[in-house]
Length: 314
Image (cartoon, rainbow, N blue to C red; front, top):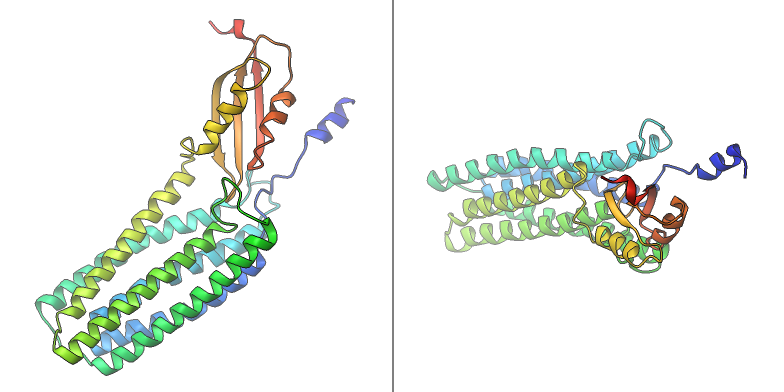
């Protein structure tokens, strides 16, 4: 094989993350439904003096924001997938959107908490009937969104992949996260309805701001968790992944005795990783030998191997 042919052989696509048009469409519909209901709940909460309803509206805003950023990320990733400026693809646009939404949500949680405590100290009259109706509608919208996202997620997972992969938690982790958040949002709606019914039937008006405080804590917990997860990916803090240990295991069992001098592993898509590894060995071999051994792990989409002789190390 001449030099030009070898260069052609080495070239490969840097599009590690394929588009997901069906997920994009379902997520867009869920975003629209959630946005409409979010506006109705926030306006209703202010109008009817219900902090539980207002908290549910703000919590739903976190869902709307997360889904909206997911839709935007899908579109940007699709539009710039072949752009050479993105050396490892466009998947991290999605992660950056999640990080941005988490920063915003911490502020939202703080505002919700402050308003709920204020209403707990200085109670205001609540129009229970109207607030209960809006909360019930919000719960129905949450359940519809959950059905949309769960239905597609299950179909996509089994039809495309045919079963779970050892390192694959879901075929679309972004959509999976949205689905879990919708379920949490539905639980917040249930809390709001319970608080409003308690106030209407038993005069327990303190339940409403209390549920508002609980709702703010739910948003804060979700935001902190999202910050932690997205920041680890954005900062390439993936060296605690199980895959790293498996790379060590593969090379340890290799017929060619070798030692790892340097190793870098990071994610380039939801289930795909890139790897740069520097090896030391006294045996005559080529990088392709080790690349072939590491190919047993399909999640390694981009592997660069450097080989150095043992005696060169002082």
